[in-house]
Length: 595
Image 1 (tube, one colour):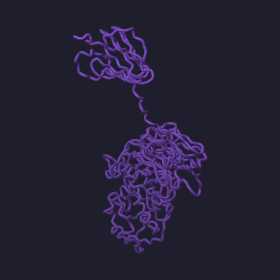
Image 2: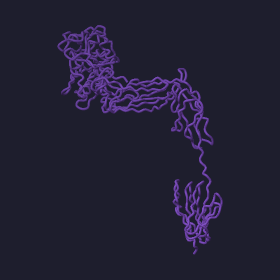
Image 3: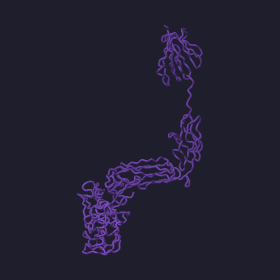
Image 4: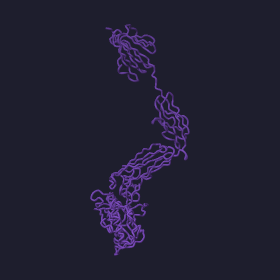
C-alpha cells in the first residue's frame, strides 16, 4: 500500500473576511499510486485569508507554476525545510507545513484528483455598475424638494444641474417627482422616470414657474362652512328605521384653481372626548381635484368652554383650517351635539342622522324662552281678534271656537281628521260669509306628530278672517267674520310664526313632539318621537321647561272646542290632556334644524 494513505491533510486559518465553505473544512492530498474517485472540491480564499498545506507521511512538492497558479504534489524526495520562494520548487518534509496566503488576489484551492491540489489566483470579480441620477433645474427662486422612488430626497435651491446622493444600479428603475414645491412657485418634472442605462442619468428636467393671480392660480374651497354631528349612543325614535346617533360626516376640500395647491396642511383641533378625524388629503392637491376630511363623533358633546353643551348651553365650535402655501386658507366650524345643547336658536331635543353625511345632522330644537308665559297669563289657542290674553287662566272674551281640518291626534297624511267636509258644514252654520276655502287649502296632517303641518293649517284659517265668534260669552251664530288676517300675536300657533333668535321657520309643536303619556305618543312603551319632556326634562335632569303648554293638535272627540296640552314636570309622570281653547297657556315654539 502506498505511503500516501491520506498523504496530506489541510487545516484552515481563518481571515477577517467571510468564513470558508463548510464542505472544505478538511483538504486532503492522496498519493498518486492509489486509485481514488476524481472528486473536485474547491475552497475560495479571500484577501488575507490563508490555508496551510500539511505534509503528513511523505515529502510534498510545492511548485510555483506561474504568478497565478501553484501546484502541490506528493514526492519521495526530501529537501530542505519549507522556504517561501515562489520562483522555484519547494519541498516539505514529513510533518512540515506550507502556508499559502491570499495577499494580492482571491485564491481558489481545489483538489482536482487524488494526489493533486491546485491553487489558482482568480481574476477580480466584475462589480455591478452604479450610475448617478440627476438633471437640470430652471426658473427656481426658492427651495424645491425632489424625491426618487418615493424614498430618496434631494433639496435644490439653485438653478443648474442637480444629482441625487444615492446612486442606482445599472438596469434599475428611477422615478423622480416633486415632493415639496417652492413657496410661490410650481415646478414640473420632465423625463422623470425610466431604467438606468450604461451611463449616468442626466436628462431629467425640472421647470419652475412663479404663481400669479392670472395664471397658475390656486383656490381652495370647503364643501361646508358649518358642520354639526350627533353624539353616539342615542336612539332616534320617530326617524325612519329608528337609527342610532353618531354618523361620521365628511368635509370635501376642492382646488378650484388652475395650479396645484402645495404644502396642503390640515391640523385637527382638540376634539371632544371620543371624537376623532382622518383625511385623504396629501401635501399637494392638483387643480380640479378634491380630498376629504372625515369626523367620527364620540359620546361627548362639544364644550361650552367648561362643560359639554348637553348641560343646556351653547357649544363653542371647533374649527378645522386647511392651508396651502399658494392659496388662501378655508375653514369649517364643527360641533358635536347632544340633547340639551343650544344650537340654531333652541335646545336640541331630537336628532336625525339619516341626512346625507356630506352635511349636518338633522333634528329639532325648542326655543330657549317662552313665546307666551304659562298659566294664568298665557295665550288662547284660537283668537277672534281680541288681545290674545286675559287673567284668571281663561279668556272667554277673546277666544274663537273654530274647527281646523286635518290636525287632530287621529289625523294622518292619508286620512284627514277633522275632514274638510266637516269643517265646511260647521263654517256654513257659524258664519254668514261664503266659505272661501277648498279642500286643497288644508293638508291632511299627521296631527299627533307633525306640528309644522298643523301650524300651517291653523294659520291658513286665521290669516283669512277675524272671526268675531262670541259663542263662549253667550253669543249665537251665525256670525259675520271680518277680513283677516287675525293678529298672530293673539293666538298660540300665530306666535310661532314670528322671528325668534333670527329664525323665522318656527311652528307650534304637535302633542307627541312635546312629550309622552297618551297612547298615541307611545305610552306605555318606547316614545313615538324624540320629545321635549323626555330629552330636555328627563334627560340628565335638565328641567329646561316646566308648566302647561299648548300643542297644535286638536282633540278628536271635540275639535271645535278643545286642543291637547302638555304639562311638563320634573317629578312624577308628565301629563297630556285636552283643554278648552279659551285657556291661557304657555307657548314654546319648535323648528327643524337646517343642514
